[in-house]
Length: 147
Image 1 (cartoon, rainbow, N blue to C red):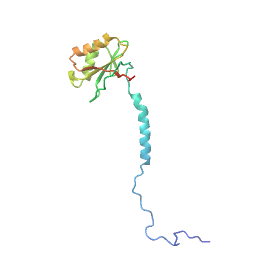
Image 2: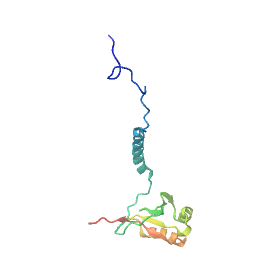
Image 3: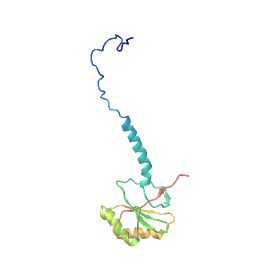
Image 4: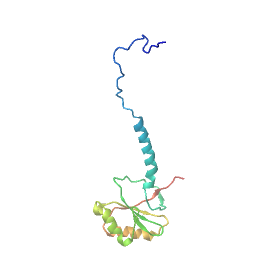
């Protein structure tokens, strides 16, 4: 009642007694972690962007290329002013822009004026910036949909 354990020849194996270590890297756990991180960042990224909701006017102008994030001044329908999401008043507007401007008065500033905002409120903002010496002031619009 003996049983032979071994190869086809029925004896001990000759040569190495153990299998050699596998030198391949198992990337499956790393791929799992990367997929989980991708999903987390895809869900969290839209939550990190904050802004002031405005209804921008539509034009047929092409989008401008950006070298870096510009300073954006927003004028809401009720005339409230904010810089990159932080509320400011008209008297403190210039000092707030000066604090953010890296290039001084050569900094490009974009004004996002709501389509229903009073034209005078937007012009007051642009006039205050222009009087402070900022010459590169632009208006942001949305691209008009084709009929």
